[in-house]
Length: 233
Picture 1 (cartoon, rainbow, N blue to C red):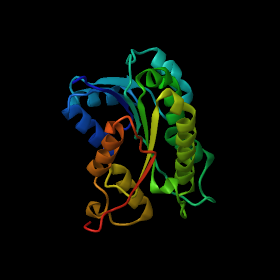
Picture 2 (tube, one colour):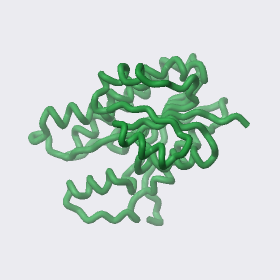
Picture 3 (tube, rainbow, N blue to C red):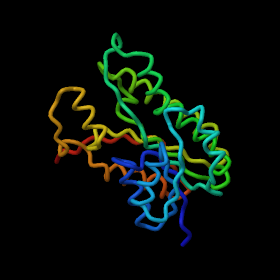
């Protein structure tokens, strides 16, 4: 059976690491995005045989140049947008720097990476998966910048789905509720709350959802999938 090739952002921790581990264990080819050479070296050591791509998602306007300097995969069977950042704060307190960085990493960079890989995605009739958030559907107090970026990510995914359906590209958005990741640790610190990972979704459960979407037979596609903690946690 031929292996598939996956480009993944955010593979260093949390949901991205869980997805990368599943795909690595089954022998698929991984191309892992890293923000700098040091991070790329760490990923290469963690996933022997995986390829790395260096580019800072906080500077999406430089991604095209960065990728031009590197070897890219000839085909891509899935592009998995998992990386993200969060900074909480009231609208009256958030600075343009926070807004711009949040939108750059969570929205503009996924749009730019999708654009840059579209030739390979079309050729392979690939899957594009956006790991969104419950905040991409509902915004609460102090979540404006993050929620705005994730609402925008939903719009990006919806538009891309309509545009590329005829090319055989499938587009999936996954909306996990709070998940036990390093990002959630940071959120709890910002909220001044004690972090109890057992209360939240395990990253492996989100990884299972993502693999279900990309492994689905070609006669169907999963467009939107919302996740929340089960009754047992």
